[in-house]
Amino acid sequence: MKLNHPTAQLYVPDGTAEEEALRRVTHLGIGAHQDDLEFMALHGILACFQQQDTWFGGVTCTNGAGSSRIGPYADCSDEAMIQVRREEQNLAARIGQYGCMIHLGYPSADIQKPGQADFVEDLITILQASRPGVVYTHNPADKHRSHIAVLSATLRALRALPPASRPHRVLGCEVWRNLDWLPDDAKVVLDVGGRDHLAAALNGVFDSQIAGGKRYDLAVMGRRLANATFLDSHQVDASDQVWFAMDLTPLVQDDSMDVIDYVQHLMDRFAADVREKLEAYFP
Image 1 (cartoon, helix red, strand yellow):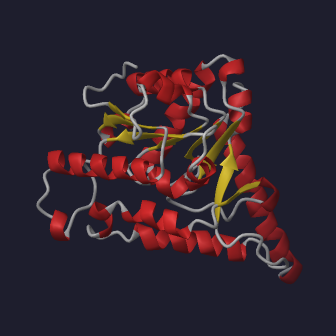
Image 2: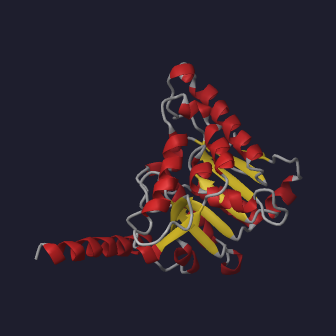
């Protein structure tokens, strides 16, 4: 598989040949940064863990050079941090038994540029080689610019495929900004409970960020617990841990749908719900 950036790399934890490793992928996560997959796409990782007929494939789009660094990583150069972050991501792939792990190697500033031709081409190449049934990526209401850039490239790549080759489910997952505000009937509720030890191991791999000043490991677990508890005020919790996603499948099935209008409609529904409840008590 030929990718555009000179530092791009395909890593296969179990040593399977590249073509077969890609072809076996059923669940594909496309994230901006090292650790995004483990936070937002745990549902897919768990669905494939220790299975023979389902395999998780990961794509990390940026190189990690812009990562925060204090403490033991304070003196890391950009080049050293790139290598640290790549090794952390590969370790997560081994722990999670991923079918393959792909590092595209782009600087964050590059993927944020309009057009993104090489970036989109890489994603098309990966999607054609793997043809996953489910894709996890960032959601359109995320506040991180690189996440939106990855979402944009992912949707463009998916829409470039023949309709018969597109995944049957595409999910935009929460990371920077949660999706609790989505109307309940529009929430995709992903049950990620039951494997706390595996989730903790995957989160804890990213020492450069944890020791570097960001306790993502605790924050992600807290959000999963909170999502499960606050999902429904009148029902006993169906799961002890939940992650939310936005269903992006309609945007992939219908190329004419406008992404902004799709999200705006959901935000308008949220605003209307808040207003309706307020007006009952503040006429």
